[in-house]
Image (cartoon, rainbow, N blue to C red; front, side, top):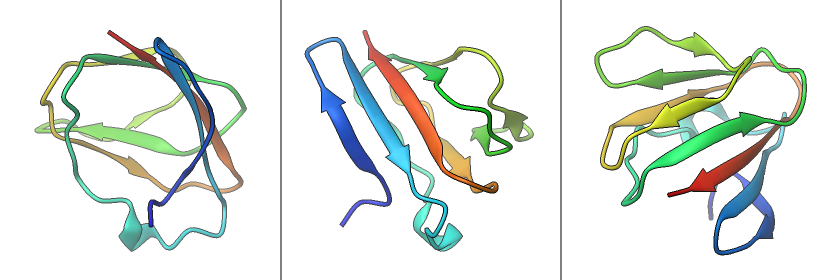
Length: 86
């Protein structure tokens, strides 16, 4: 099981939702095999943390390079993202 639901998937992007009822322990450090740009689709206080960086708010587009360790940090409410694949 994944800690998210993919609502829409195409060759260029994924619309992904993290439910407010998720257990924060499920939000593991991970890395992806392609560059990604995150676009936030709703108001949120969830955060993103990149390797060797402090957590940052999800207020604007964020670029995550291929194989960069990162994780999502739970906030309140639901998090909805558009993940642009490169």
